[in-house]
Length: 270
Image (cartoon, rainbow, N blue to C red):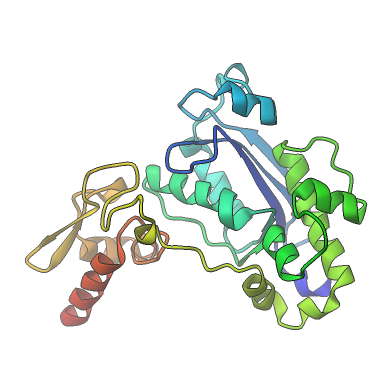
């Protein structure tokens, strides 16, 4: 598929302790695909979530508390995950609504910058946009397109299936290539809600915590979470511009009104 030439292309999936990214954790992740040079990528890892895996979750993905004993925490896997995601075309089934939300919260918990994919392609949203008949679960779509999925709810199997599924859907709908990669991303509905718009998250408050995420002192903003807790935004901007950029993005735990105040302060300082 020439549209993807020159890019790292990875199917991506996670298995978790539950369905709520605010309180649940990732227990397995998988990336299946190829690097820019064409070399294959096949990485599947278990993660110690730091909380118990409920029996009902184990019944879904087969990963038990005993399985993750001795496995690294998310923080220990974060660098590898970030390096795989950065600049890549990431393909997953319900990746926008589920897997990416977990990635966002996991990186926030450890106070690290969120990695930046080239595009996120959600095969669930694409199936809906193309109005493909029938149910749009990964299992049903794989059956429709003749894709083998013997180990559903295993991260590597689901990641590989999503990758092949995209190829199959594009083969049958060549018109979706007309807008290029960004067009496909738009078709997949990648307009994720900022945290501050969620009714369960107060403006300027870190999800799952009652501490304010920022404190304003004489116009200057002091960050109150993560690895730069207690540092001013101007200091962070000067020593770690990438992290500062993430703080000002919709993916950060800082609410929109607080980001607007920071932006106003930055303009005044120029």
